[in-house]
Image 1 (spheres, rainbow, N blue to C red):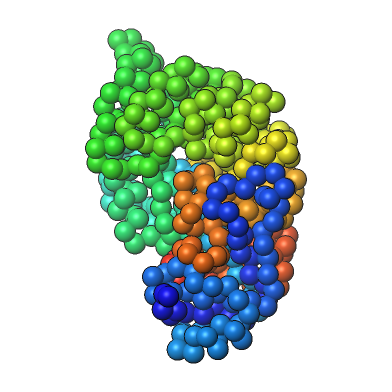
Image 2 (cartoon, rainbow, N blue to C red):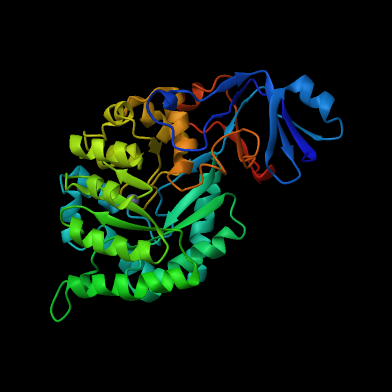
Amino acid sequence: MTHVTRLFINATQVVTCAGPARGRRGVEQADAAVRDGVGVAVGADGRVVSVAPDGDLRAAHPGAELIDCAGGVLTPGFVDSHTHAIFGRARYEEQELRAAGVGYLEIARRGGGIHSSVRDLRTRSADDLVALARARLRRIAAHGTTTLEVKSGYGLSLESELTTLRVIRRLAADAPMRLVPTFLGAHEVPLEYREAPRDREEYIALVTGEMIPAVAAEGLARFCDVFCEPGVYTVSETRRILLAARAAGLALKLHADELENGAAAELAAELGATSADHLAAISEAGVAALAKAGTVATLLPGTMLFLGRPKQAPARALVAAGVPVALASDFNPGTSPTVNFPLVLTLGVSQLRLSVGEAFVAATVNGAAALGLAAEVGQLAPGFQADLALFDVRDHREIPYWYGDNRCLRTWLGGRPAHLG
Ligand SMILES: [Zn+2]
């Protein structure tokens, strides 16, 4: 048996999310397996050994270091499965443009939006990008996140996409959370491929023929993602790009049906994508297709809130249809500049009408499933990584309740301190 080195004791509640090591669907998504009066024993290998009453743990492991949770609530660290954390400058000016009635696609057509981040990122050194992102990762960790997916996609050239992914790899060496890299070279069609002699076909050929092979050869990404949306990449273009990625050994994600329905969710299901993300405009057929394929629906309520759009993804219909639903921040400089994962939980309940239990499962187990990590992280159960977050509340329902506040005190990664408060 693994030698127990640490005991987390004196928590009022432990949200374990214990259960099957896969995306939770339907009624099982509602059970976050919250327990009172228990502690967590962690082994020398950084994994959970047992969850049991404090007294039993102390009697069984008298030599272990005691970590006093001081009456707070212990949860699995959040698994944020959708971010764009590598960028240069903030884009606060667009917030006022939107307030004045200028739409997202119109801002893009004027060369703003993603394109302004692309222009900016291409001028920056890798060291600069590492320094900017490192500060952001600290803020994200301070809110309870212990696993973070990070996409490229503000480079949109072979060199700057590879630079972005190498930056993520450098950050992963000492980040206060686990990082999962995703290649998003098809985030937009760069402006220089929109006028003769170049065209979007040439860019897609660059993505499939040069970028994907280079990313795969260097082992720089676990996933390939495409922004599949009317006005960005069509369903048939997305299919070609993702088939090339799959052939190169990458798992698949899609930005799907975010603003307008384009049957992108159906494509995610067809290709066996790990997740389909956004989905505010998904159709009934799209919901049914995701359910059948077992693809995780990753919902990003912060984005719709920040964009001031009234229509959120149909979370209740997705849960009812048996689609595993995950919550993520979509942290990015244009449409969701929040590092606050507890706020995403709040929006999951208040905007998406998830129960608190469903929201916790969406933020942990199902986020892990959206990253192919459901057997590693996302629950406090024997054998799982001891990735924990401690909150200064007495009941787990207070975490989404005190909205906008940050009650996270500390986090641990594999049982070792990550964010120290
Ligand atoms: Zn995104």
